Image (cartoon, rainbow, N blue to C red):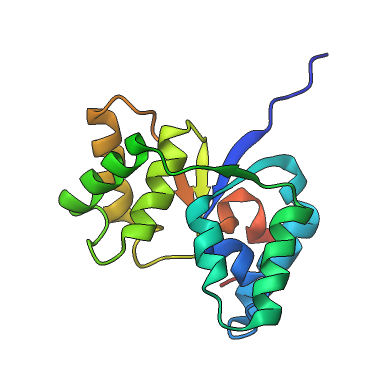
Length: 164
């Protein structure tokens, strides 16, 4: 029997960062349990944007821990291509993502242009929210990109570890 292909999931910075974020204990617990028990079921991706954002973490120990987590779980690194920049610009121009949050638009556009199956985020304000998701799907369809599933770790098996 052929091996089942793993779902490809892009993690924005909020996911590996939440692993070490003690300010939201339930989210931290869900993230830790997810990495321990669910992460190996997926092919994990991050991008140069994620690396930049991790580099801006002020707490040096947390920055080091988050960086090591991306290595431990063998997260594949994606670049910010011109296609992704253009798509991110479209997301912002059409109101899917606020112009004040270009990094959020880049995360989604990088995942989309690289044909990643899904994007996981704890950002409920600009990413994991019905209006941005609907607009993103509409824009992606207009440019012949496949729809991308967007959700918190809950939809990727994290729901069994608690409520956020």
